[in-house]
Length: 212
Ligand SMILES: Cc1cc2nc3c(=O)[nH]c(=O)nc-3n(C[C@H](O)[C@H](O)[C@H](O)COP(=O)(O)O)c2cc1C
Image (cartoon, rainbow, N blue to C red; front, side):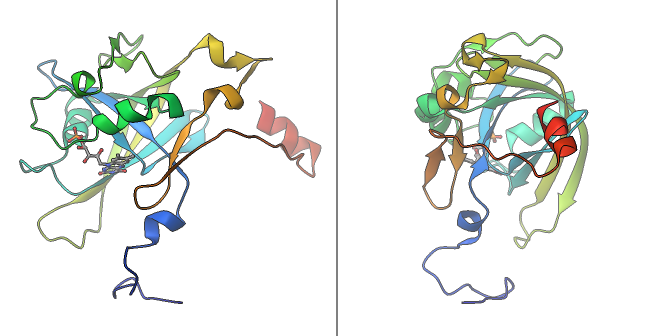
């Protein structure tokens, strides 16, 4: 099949997010200027460069109470946020924090999660998550949006500090078979990394660079 994205795809459900998958999940903790905490998952999330480490988040649509989603609002107001990694073991807590609730609700409570102090920034991290990346806001870019009543945005952030639970480090590497990062597929579907295989790069220089 082929479809122009300006037209309907003709399928029962939109295939786009199933095609661009698996996507990692940035579970973003943030704080507004009054110290109110917020936590929500974002699968329009990825690393864009690694020196310095830089991440991207995509925000689709608005908060149901109007204006940007709380996470975007807080990132722009405070200039800081934490991208916590979601693992298979904490999938239900992550899901609980995705509910579109009133602005004053602290989703750490919805997920029965612990807010642990960050080292370099004010918003706390999720203690139950094995990896927390402390980020500072670099830039927000408005993206095209087909809904005239909403807006889409892309946020770039620089990772300034990374917490890794030592239990997940083996032989100087993050042990993915223990880590089980969760990934978003399309529809209601998820996947988790349970198996790993390695490939040697054809040139040694690229191999060395990858391991740095
Ligand atoms: C796994 C998962 C991934 C999500 N990814 C995104 C995303 O990339 N962008 C987005 O705008 N909303 C995404 N959502 C929905 C938001 O988490 C949801 O709108 C949330 O209520 C926003 O909360 P906030 O207003 O506190 O920021 C996702 C939800 C789930 C469960």
